[in-house]
Image (tube, rainbow, N blue to C red; front, side, top):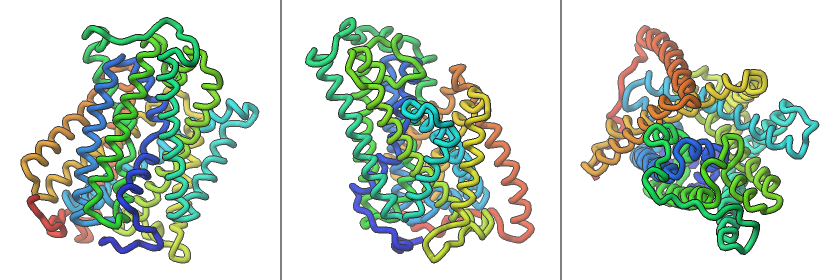
Amino acid sequence: MAHSKQDSEKPLQWWQLSLLGVACTIGTGFFLGSSIAITMAGPSVLLVYMIAALGTYFVFEALAKMTISDPQKGSFRSYAKKAYGRWAGFSSGWVYWASEMLIIGSQMTALSIFSQLWFPDLPLWLLASIYAALGLLVILAGSKSFDRTENLLAVLKISAIFMFIILAALALFGLIGTDPDGTHIPRTGKEFFPHGLKGLLPAFIYGFYGFGGIEIMGLLAVRLKQMKEAPKSGKVMLLTLGLIYVLSIGLALIMVSQADFSHEESPFVTALTAYAIPYVNHVFNGVFIIAGFSTMVASMFAVIRILVTLAEDRDAPRLFAKKIHHKWELPAILLTTLGIIVSIVLSIFMPDQMYEYVTTAAGLMLLYNWIFILGSYGRLLDLTKKEQMKRLIGFLFILLGVIGTVFHATSRPGFFVSLIFLLLIAVVTLIMNHFWKKKGDGDKPSLTLFTKTTR
């Protein structure tokens, strides 16, 4: 699909795509997930976030260059289909849809838990339902409403991180708060890598969680006024996030010792609370709600868009491609709403540990789609040696994130659950492939749809 100003969606400048990318990316995966990474890797977590930022950029650059060559509303799943055949587009789309639905459920549950700090008498299911309804209202209001909401929330999230950086700097200089027991700067290799490779490797998945959302940028990139500026959008966004992530986590590590961090609390709350800075819990509780709601709405947008493109390609019932009044993809929205209800029920009634395994698996499944993106990039475009090298490094970094989960008891079950999900989708794909071949509607890649160029 060429850039056709689909429907009434407003074309984007490159910086607007960068800002939307920030909104899709900064979520509870960073604000809370970073504390788990710190307990695993200690100060070497800074290296984890730098490597994750670089690996994420290589994936986005691949997606952006494919978008420049052939803009597609279905983005990564459309490129997988063209590179490898119908089976790849089908499995990539449904893996993404299923994983995002599970993640949306966990985001709503997290939002509900945060909200109970202020509304302790309201049940989780009611709070989750309120957030679901608000998110769907943003989607139904159209692309302008989505853009404005996400841009506002992006600015608030960046402001929150900068607020922490400023407060942390003032606390370290003794201008506010009470210094508990001095600074904590690692001076030896052992202090920087307290748990060695066994601590470093499992932290990678949390580093990548902090940058998850670039595939949503890919879905939005078709709206760029100047398609050639897509890589610049990702570069600016990921460079900005990488710098503020490393700076904020680095300051938290200097303020308190590694032993003070826990899985249950954000490292920023831990650091500021240690310096007796007032109202930290309430301020950051609001930040977590903003961050979680923003990424939840972005995920809703993505699953609806993917479902519509699956239906348009006859990889889902055609009903889900229909629009009401040429504006609302109501059948796709209704199925997504049903999926959200199921996900909320699972998140509230499934045992905590089991649900954690499922959502960890869902996060890993997003990385499997990143592998598809890099694979499609190599098949659909003629790459220079430099581009091939970046692609291979991207593969290596993502594999570190996936394989690293095997090295820690917290994430290991999620790895095996993700393999079960992949196996189930693979079985469905094989069954569907049998019917496609019967109808002569098969599995051949269509590389000729791309203009291959050597840059």
